[in-house]
Length: 573
Image 1: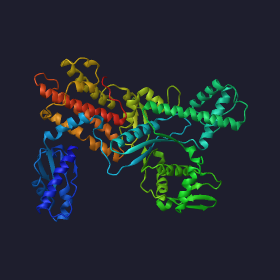
Image 2: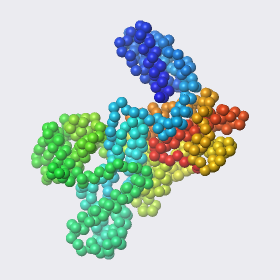
Image 3: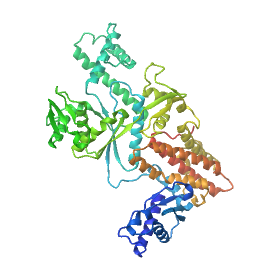
Image 4: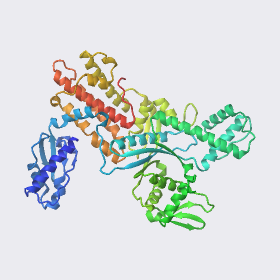
């Protein structure tokens, strides 16, 4: 239980006592939620319940606040409280209130800060979903970082999350890719043939064609063009998906499912494919009609600007029909919430997709998060082309140069609805100007302190122990935490205590970027603490032990925070 939860229980008890003795004329007991005051000088927590009760109790809010304060039960948490403004109750807590968090973090480890939902929620989180016609670009990298961290944070907050990659392997773009590969193959064999206007002209296509020449020689020169197209389509598809999977694996993504768009068109035992099943379900509800030879979905009945075509006049299915079938299939797989991460250029597509969900009776089950652009810089100057290929810098090239940790952290450093200016040279720096280095250095510094403490105590093999092993060897469980009363110690403990609420809020608001801010604040508070409080003091062994316990709690929490971002927590730098 967090400090906030404990304090809310105390305030709730005061309200109940006020109602019981007739001081507050209320028929129902309210939940006394707390919030952080805007200024630290106003205390640790503020309660606005008195203002919310004024109308119901027919009393002045300040009078209600005073009644609540007068009925506060005896406790060891509240140092003092003040009634401010129209009826705020500001609480300043005792050091003892925050000292328990040190034990909680150290005993719970990676479980610290976990919470549960009142109503279980199974989430399908779909992200990246790059077309298998080329390497991943830097924008895909932002979505890869965002989706993975989102899944981690939501699981910590009690959601059940499956991560899914939608493979767009159906449609004309795959034929265009195959045709481009054929032309490059024939060119590699010496034929004088030009690339068609609609083509994929990247260097990766040329490289792949050369690989086919090396393995197959002239096998495909004079075969039936349609047979060759099919073969090259499959070869190209497999190569691109291998590239995507490898890049995502290096980046630390772990998808539960790679869902093939093509599978939507494969009939099941009943003879119907998933597209037909979704279409029939919508038709049964009365939202399908035909006009001028085309088939439409009545999306305007659910707030869309116009009805959407599902089947064109020539009988060809639209891309939207595939999306209809895909999302319907997700719901049939038992998910409560469908959470999609798309590029910002797809914002106009959201209303029609939410309309289709509403048509099936799932009006609130699709949520779309838009990821804004990534602008690449090198020493403050815009970069668009790769030095190696002379073309767009790929996501793989970026992580090869910068590293996974810095790429992830910087991709997550701002809200998804804001563009990111990513400076490659800043990401590579090993100083405080690089935010991920600053946070990781704090963790490594803590590990160094624990190692030094173990060596000073003569613990054998300390140099080769992990930080967790060092903490255990130092036997910090019986540390006198009541000695932790210094302002810097309290600030560090208060920050750690806020972790549970932070994670729950980041999950609720789909905002993992908040963890980067939290990590930097935690690292900064630790550095301040270490400057202001001597940790290893032979003249004050009990205080040193208590501070080592706090240092270890900060280590656990920093590693946790970095872990939820998908970033490593090095023990030496």
